[in-house]
Every structure is written in structure tokens, then in C-alpha cells.
Length: 142
Image (tube, helix red, strand yellow):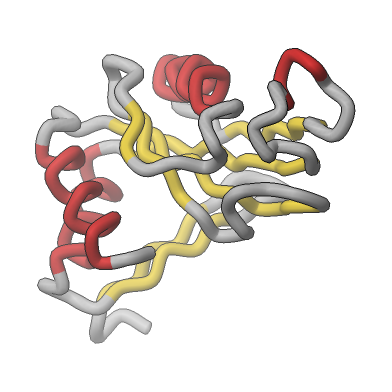
């Protein structure tokens, strides 16, 4: 993430009221605006911060993120944009991508914020298959 994206995320997270969903591109095939690892934050009012595509995915990802907030369960979604007139729209979204949406509740959100602010070096790792799980380690807890 660029420093500007980190600052934008920090400002949005401070408004998140203890809840948000982190959407991460976990697989990209073919043409896409962003690569694996790109992140977008979705706030409880469906506001998005940063982006995953040129605008073709964000509205649907935001709606699915609201479901993740409601259930508290992560979700992995595949989008095939290669020949889809509805998604592709000729906007450069011509590949296929997978997005992992995970809820960030108070304890994890606080640790994530501290890491982004540089208050404590940290690592966020998400288990994408084989069961639920997240790891967030801060300095001294490796």
C-alpha cells in the first residue's frame, strides 16, 4: 500500500465505530487494475476506502461486506469479468479475481490501526481455506 492509501485507511478506520470489513484481492488472472494483496476497507454505512478495481467490483463487494458485518463470518467471492457485459463495461476489468472479505471487530481493528499508524510493527495474516482464523502479531509477540 502506498503511504497515501495508508493515511486514507487510517482516517476511515477512525470513523469505523469499532467495525469494518477488509476486502483483499487474493487471486488475479488476466487483465485487472490491481494485483494480489490490494485492499479496500468497507465501513458499516457501505462507504469504501481505497479500491480493488477500476470501479466495476466495488459496489458488489460493498454489499457483500455488509453481510460479512452482519454475520461476523469471512467470505471469499470470485468474479469472472472476462466476457461479462454487466461487470466488464469496457473499463479494463477483463480478467477474473477472487476477493476475501473479513470482519475487523474492535480488538482486531485496534491492533490493525496501531500497526498502520506505526505505533507497533505488526503482521496481519488471514487463513483463506480450511477453517476460520486470523493472526495479528505485534512486536514482541512473534
